[in-house]
Image (tube, rainbow, N blue to C red; front, side, top):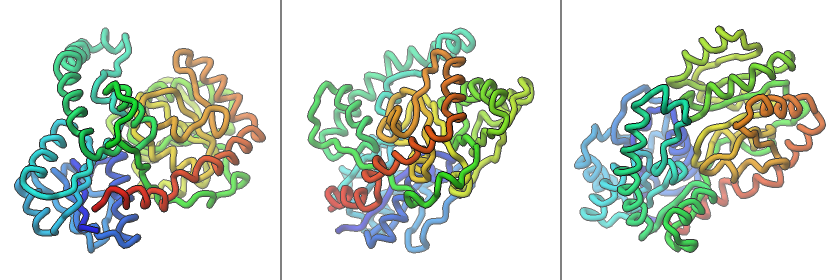
Length: 373
């Protein structure tokens, strides 16, 4: 197998792509894959993950010539491109294909619909008119450009991180059989079943970035009723992001009970071992690492219908529930009904074992072996 490099836009950001890049690099390294370098287009923040010293981590400082130099220096024959900025990644892929013989593997870390839609509610359009301009730009510029990019990239090997995202790509391109498009799940660093459900505490946990697309305000609006009805329960919010201060103010103003903010944490396992249930009601996802980790930790999953790969992990009525966000009062009642029924939760938790087999590290490595040269 030829040497491997992984490109990511900024490995210092507090995002899912950064964490799964770190997990993938470690998994490949520990499994004997010849991974040599992680290439970051820029570094704008504090580095949160420590890669093995044998993997050279390089800040390209916005210079793509540095990318080509590093590819040559490390004799990279396989370049995994973690797609966050679609247009920039397409330009990088075109450049590398033109100037090297690398086997390039683009990996789409979101639902493809993320690049074709604006996820604003009607009230958001009225409250912030700039959203209308953003919608028009998406509708008449970015949508057409991104469709062309998807069409070009899928002519060669192309990876989605969930089965649902792969199906969405087929729907978008109007082709139910795209032979070059496949899905490979992201690895996590938690072993399944290492926690006994009976040892857990009455804690509902959210893990991840605190930003608008995660519907952070909606989570708190639902929890307001839950916290009043179930005072023995705690809502633990683990993460950081632009919405953190606003969320704290909202909790204080509305006197919402049982909410604890921890801030960023690189070791979420200590919180997952304690909690019974995990919630994620975001507008879109690629493959939500937080819910994979929650499934592995035997948590009951709480989500909603959205674009992307949550549906690869959460099966309504089997290992969790889906909330109807069109009726938040009803969503709160459904959550109260779940959290107040220990036997139901225990049964849903046990079903995680029937679903987690497809997410094992070995199956992920086997899939990568098929496309790395």
